[in-house]
Length: 262
Image 1 (spheres, helix red, strand yellow):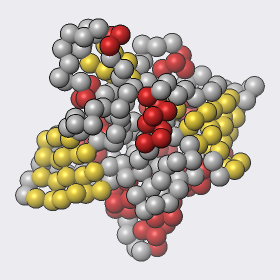
Image 2: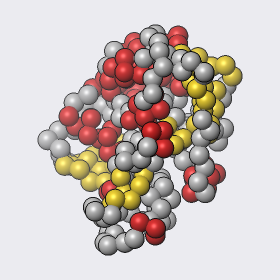
Image 3: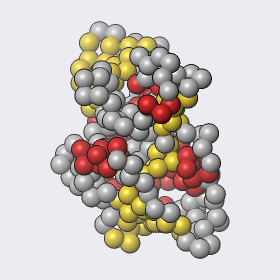
Image 4: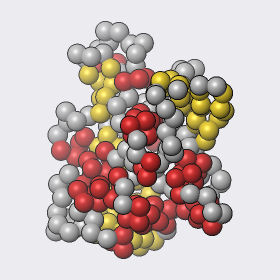
């Protein structure tokens, strides 16, 4: 089975080497791995699997689903910075950076840790709109974490390493602020948020419609987060995420070196 995916703008990958295959020996100073790709660059990833993913969703976490999410999703609130690796002539996740310099904001325009390290607050960009035209707010983030606790799949596993004890520990002080209460200070909290490859934030309004319509949550995730473009013999094509984490204004800010505040 060959799956064809349209990648999100500006390299939605945690490891974005797929956008750099055409680059040969180039000085690191000339490579801005966080810049949007050229408008004429082909952003189609073709991957051959033994089977189609049951759903592009953590609750159907087959090898195919894991690989698809890993290759097409790079975080929501946070993401790893992408840096140039001259020894490989490619861009990749900045795990060679020091501490929190490894990550930067994606949906979050700023973030702050409490003095004792048990409260994290993230201010969301206000220009993120879902495929359905709904503004994405804290409630979508909160509901998606609540669903993660309910499903007890990959996202639930991440709550354990993030030290989030229960779904009510993810709250909304205001529509564009996401707050996490964790059990103890976690020096890797930002990196773990950026590492996620269990899928994105639901448009909770549309996802609840899917649930009330008696569709499975897995089906809802596949339809609400990724758009299947076409199905032909031995091939399927998806486009996503529908929730574009990089609206044009955010793209310009990112390219200009927009960083979150700690």
